[in-house]
Amino acid sequence: MMKDQLRDLIDRITEANHVSDDDVKMLQGEILDTGITCRLEVESLLALDRVVDAAESWGPVLTKLVVDFVVWNRAPHGVVSNDDAFWLATLLEISGPSPNAMSIAYAILDEAGYVDVALLDFIMRGRQQARLSQMAA
Image (cartoon, rainbow, N blue to C red; front, side):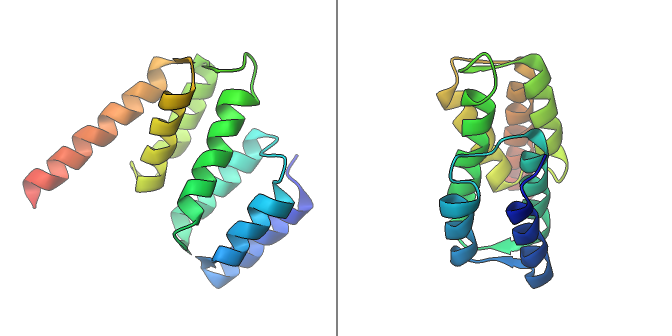
């Protein structure tokens, strides 16, 4: 279940159409000071990431929150199972391999002891799309 404070923050940010540095500080220091607690929170934050502009501090904080949840708050710790990798890759793929989506995927790859192939496939598709975009430019 998502925290009411997080829901309120997401509503306010969506209305403003911008994540400010103050929003990021509040998210990190007060609302999710102990980290993300459920998939719904990850899904909500990633949906928010797709639809609003954000301060530069947003990407690193979003990445850390998602990585900590997926790698360390899910059992077994340090392992990204097929179920979690497929779920996360599907979420990250929704609007294509955005910079924040790729940052999250690479950070999980760096931090986890084992990552299922579903997330690796997302990374490879993102790299291929970036190469094709460069060739077309």
